[in-house]
Length: 196
Image (cartoon, rainbow, N blue to C red; front, side, top):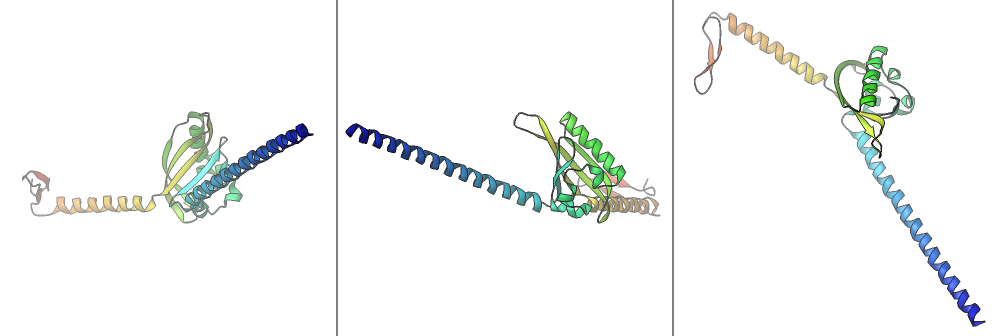
């Protein structure tokens, strides 16, 4: 009888330890899931609130996810674009160029940087795009990502500066008086035709 009681207590102790280990494992698993979810929520917040357009595509070049800025720029939705190729978001010509750049990234693993005009929900814009491969844990390409910046205002400012410089040079060179500019050491920097 004593042996049966000892054996029963032993089995009870084993069951309690096993139950405790299982509960500890479950608690650690729940904690890991919560931490992963929190990280995912943080990354999603960064993705959606970034001041640039961002998208991810799968290994075939189909959209997996786009951020809010991309949705607004091209008047599309994440759900409506998911699983589709670039020509679903862009005009056929831009869609084809985008597809070719996607394939280059996916085939070579290179970063591709490009600048081009695109018709958007806000009219014709100049976009600067950086495309990069996304690798899995084994180092294999599993898709691509891109960061897109609308640089239309910068391009317009550069064009205005060039135009202003050309006008200034025309006035300078055609002035009926001698004009020259020197640096701090007295070296000539600009001399107009009359000064020559």
